[in-house]
Length: 300
Image 1 (cartoon, rainbow, N blue to C red):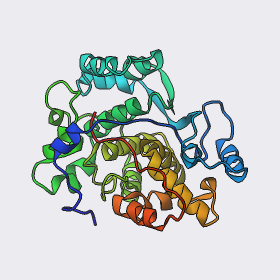
Image 2 (image 1 turned 180 degrees about the vertical axis):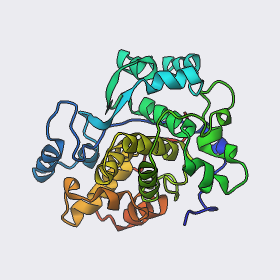
Image 3 (image 1 turned 90 degrees about the vertical axis):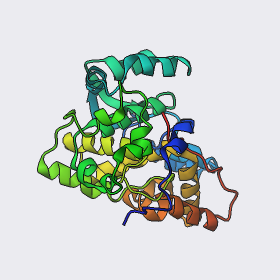
């Protein structure tokens, strides 16, 4: 059951939040940017006395995710979900877009998404736009419809990079088409993935992280990624969207004698660990000095 009251924050709170994307990433069975077996190297670093849990859960080398991006960015720009001038203006204030960043937004033939410390915020925003605009039953029949006006959430009213109102694009385009079986898989997995900024699952994508994860799950399912790999890749995203939270969770498991590369991704993404209340419970059990709680704000 989704929490309807305690963690439903007004959109103005999220719009005013600053997106802090100091993003490293955790390679959970996926290829590192260099193509090495990251889980093995992570475990070795941990066993040799590595104390920086943030680097264990979010190693700085980057990871290739199991989805091809293709021309999705370009399609969203052409549809108006992303206003090219607005997004360029936002990133000009943040140091500008790299060639790779521009390809994600405007390119025709991108390969697999590669998440890095520098592009993590951009990938969050691109997946947010995809989750918001892609036609899906979760948006049309799920908890987003339980409050009478879906425009009032941070994931909708907070999307300020569209041409016109974000709700003009809400569940309106078939950027990613799903079969019935693929849709069922997205619904199943989305109900088991939480994020540390609230007590809602991805099935209730009321903030940017939830909406971005919904877009990511649809993209993975449409490209034939299996359920277990979906959880592992989702943990990669969460681990560097909320790097300090997952460093603390890794520390908790290390105290119990379990290295991060041995944890079960589905379990870590559950309400027990990845919701705000679950995370706070884990923090209360840590006996070593804690990593600072941190992560991305829920705005553009």
